[in-house]
Length: 429
Image (cartoon, rainbow, N blue to C red; front, side):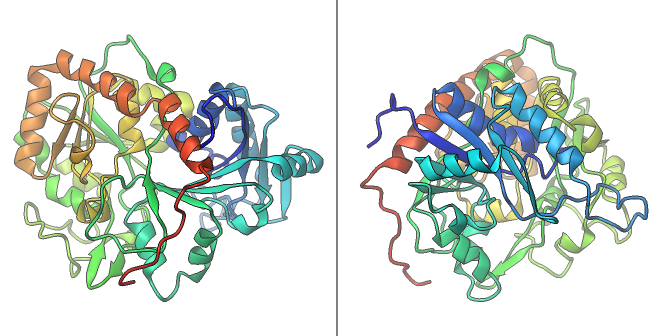
């Protein structure tokens, strides 16, 4: 096993440039690269997703969603990398031309030919086979249950399955063995989001708002073995009446202004037996629906558009209240949100829907898990009654479970272990 004191050349992948107005996305990926850099490793960031940059509002025609000019993307990435001491250690491939930005071709080839480890965060590389010159390729699954279902489906996911098979070792945010998750031919090892604790500390007093940052639906629901695995829209319907149950508590949602109705779970699909509220009326905008139920809604694109705004939004919140994707709830994989980990690091309690993480992370102080509206209400009222102790516990849990130094040291050791069991025989797939 690699010694924790050994300096390795490590390449980290991600989607920082792809989403220049989503500060949370930048934090998700840069905390890998910056965390490894702070541990003393020789770190480089590479973005080669094959994803075309897109416009936020359809461009001048309001119907052109492909950004043919990647200047904002490259500028954003350069600024993020420079901020964390990686200003000359990044490369971005613009797929439309195609064209590389950042490191020179010579430097990029030299790095890749000599790298010890490539950490493919969220499986963001389009063609990981192009990077087999790296000694070891590690896959980080940040979307458990959905990832395993895609790997198990016999039709329509061949490209994704080939991409996954290229790696040497596999990690997942789904730390809890999941009954509902599909079996795959990979030995998934548990990991979690690394958080740069010092970057999230704050002495500022929060405003009186329970907040979260979310998309109503991130992609279409999937069906596997007769079950639908949906997005947050499914679960939020169950809890939309929460403000009425906790009068005097301010609930706020930062949500992207662009929604995709075709990704939502329709009325005729399974909703995990949700009966607490009726389905949103057809034709009613999500923001209007939430506002009528007592939620404040702000535009995430404005409130959380870069690293600083995103962090300020989290630090300025009294606590987080949030649901999870329906697939995570059904799968009970133990997934825990990268966003919620940032709230904890800022000393902000989180009241979040249980996905099985309550069997891994201590709950009751700092982290409060719920399954029903009644449990969510009780948790919020408990935070209100004992706020100082919950805030202290939140920071303590962040330090014990999400500190980038600990998380990444453990990840690198296991990724480089010569005896790592990479693939297992699929059973019942």
